Length: 203
Image (cartoon, rainbow, N blue to C red):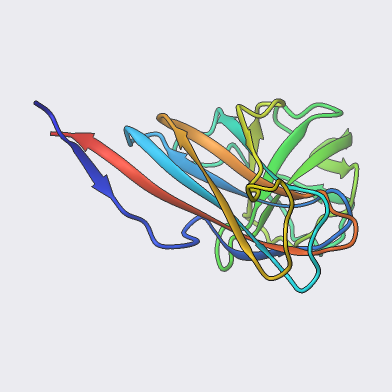
């Protein structure tokens, strides 16, 4: 009988201790390529600070499509944190009102989900300023507009305490994914980790 081959990851190997500010809709996101593995086991971790949040941090997992071995779109020029317009190598198939993922290609590989407000050539005006700064050749991915999976770590009481850790697991089949964490609290910042372990094959 075939047995699964399990590959353990390291803590935060997808999103590593990223702080998400309060504000009601601040997020952190990352591209994950699980297209060559049988199963991905995600651990979605919420770490609260000295102020306990009263609203949940929601993890959304979107299907990434038309990516393959490389991102379908890239940054044609750099963008500062807070930028409301970014210039890509092409507008591609982006549409007004569409969400898509942008992510740094190197370094901390910080990313976020942004929404198109308008398009003029390859210049994309966003509905809100970017959280992070981006460089030329950083990455942009198409994502399905509805999350395939949504999860929110919580305690058995359904609430959260200060300086505490909460987590939940989600299991994914083969594919490419955008994993997004959204802090919906308006007064408390939070920190998130996303870790993946994999079943790489059966033998």
